[in-house]
Length: 317
Ligand code: UDP
Ligand code: MG
View 1 (cartoon, rainbow, N blue to C red):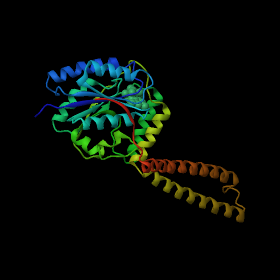
View 2: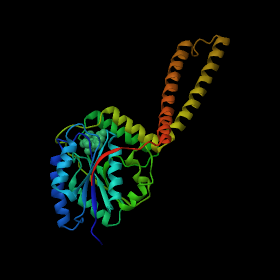
View 3: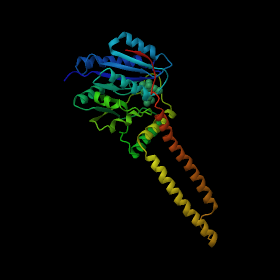
View 4: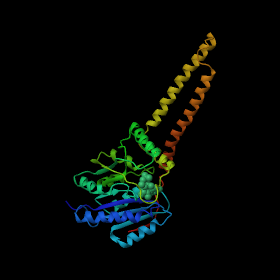
């Protein structure tokens, strides 16, 4: 079998502090993989600067000049978000004719020593190899939110492994298929388990970020979670329907109880206080349901507009 031409795709947002250390580690790994004939010598790293405001692009340009053939990069005109940066990297890797691409974060919190296992799995015929986190370095609150998110999204019928994020290898065939997914609202990790391709999971340990801090706020994570759910499941809409049905049914029972109470003076049956509490609850539920429907309408709107997922400002070929 011909040697694998690999691209390592890295989204970078304000990673000027982190990137030099990460690149150094990756070059060492690259040398080892090439020496062991695991990847071909024309493999490269594809860096996507997601509109950084620190010196990330300067770090990338320096790396490009120092090792021309091994670094390719694009810079977005502004911050389009990590999902857009990843898809841009994968699209470019595909355009540059790679056999496989691996996505990994710029802080290398994922275990780069597993990359060799990823490539071996690819050579064994797997189209997709997903890294599954065995631990978390996040705080208590983020951990709870993340665990709940995977429980909810699985309950809603979305086929995605808990603790799988963006550390993954995809084959050229997968990239080909992915190029037909034109959606604006991207939740990349939701796509892969649904393609029906040969997929392998590989466990890895997360390490602490060495420099800089997480680029995700609670709100941006919440937005990503909502995008993921709305992109892959219509069950929340069905739940809204059943909720409406249930609330209406209970309201009718309450109304009957109230009428019976008035006619027969049965004071132990529900009175006005219960009605008021019920009304407040039902009003809250209505607003919640409108919010859920609103998420879907918002996504339909952005999909219909079909604006570009990102705008490239500069490219290092
Ligand atoms: N990132 C990005 N655009 C953003 C936010 C993050 O390209 O708007 C990149 C970031 O530079 C990193 C990866 O996405 O390479 C994951 O980010 P981070 O390490 O901050 O996430 P966490 O480890 O907290 O999940
Ligand atoms: Mg990180």
